[in-house]
Length: 303
Picture 1 (cartoon, rainbow, N blue to C red):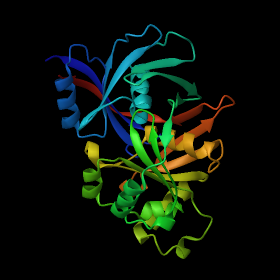
Picture 2 (picture 1 turned 90 degrees about the horizontal axis):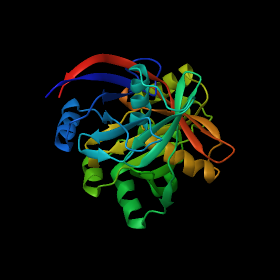
Picture 3 (picture 1 turned 90 degrees about the vertical axis):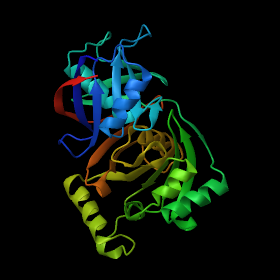
Picture 4 (picture 1 turned 180 degrees about the vertical axis):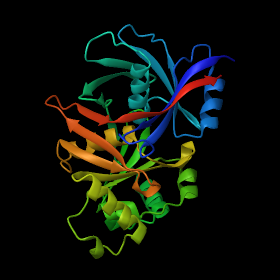
């Protein structure tokens, strides 16, 4: 074991402790898979990353991403948080204005938009879920079929069952049966567009969730999508803010005309967070996912 530089970063927020925390081991040389997995389980965060020298000539650094339950080929908040930590620790990209991250899923371009980092969403594979899977997931979420506007299996490294629901209120009111979702072995991302209606006119949403939504709107107008991510199969019942899911949702929902080419997504309200995900699609149809990051812990770890 040796002492290694370490940071804990809050991602998709400019205010500490309102986003999704990420543990970053800045020098993971010499660590084997078991050591990485053990530390990720110990941090008990949705993801822990380990930075290594790249093996691809064009990459600036290589990252391995672990949940408490296993390794991911790609994930969004670890991409932004790891890049933030790498730059803050003195990392210098090979090409001006562009950082290239190497991960299991391949090379991910990252750039600055002002002070904010944004990454290019990886290619998306999507397909219609089976009626049987959709019915079982709906039951685990307590949804009626008429509340589901559209559904797709989304794969950009992680695989999510994406559900577009009839309203943001429905998303915020969900009380999933996480045991059922774990048994199904399917991560589920739900999203809904906020309705232009008075809070009091929404009987489906509890008072606490209604207050959470009102807080979010009053502090950050222009929310285009409310998102929640349920990942019990990998040991995370609900993820606070999820870059990979927001990336695949954006590629799907913009392409199918459900959302404009630029919008702001909110996630984490039901966990007491206020995550903000900035989404845009450029003229070449590349979707970019952005978010602020802030370092909360800066020190060393013995691994």
